[in-house]
Image 1 (cartoon, rainbow, N blue to C red):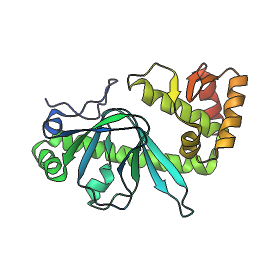
Image 2: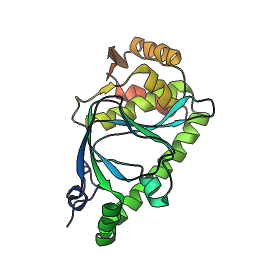
Image 3: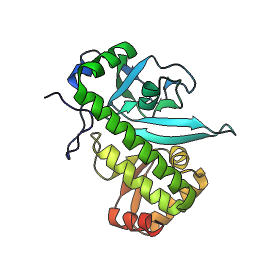
Image 4: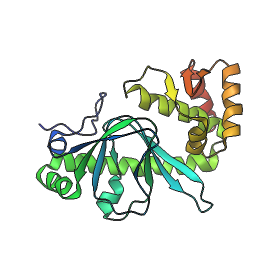
Length: 222
């Protein structure tokens, strides 16, 4: 049975061998643009190692981070399926390696392997659901709850990315953009979380000391 990209079991996702066999290996430095919103997709990008921020510019020109993707995740899935231009931009948060599969090879593999096709459809549906959940969260959950939820979510992503558990490495500006606020508010709330012994910080690294406490704060506003 071919490896699936998004496993329903509690194990790390894998890039399917049929896609990997047709891929070119690319390396990007930290803060390097992978693709630009409005340009035409030439193929699929899979994150081999590292982390990528997916962003969109608002009407005021301010960048909003829609999500952060890590190992074995596929970028621009909805754009490939809808055969439209990129609806967002992708930029590295750190030095990262990606696999690139041309659009032609991508569709040929999906035609040949129903399991991979179904897995990607499942992931597309999950992306839509998570996007809707984030819209509701930004609209109704206070910033304190959004920050607690973001730290837990990012810790889950980074800990499966070969990082030390309970550590999140992200700039305050990116964290603010991710939860829809300003850096000053993030700094103030992180200071409160430190005083409550929920976290400790060193530079851009945030160590989670009390995940249950952050979970309670996140759920207070549901």
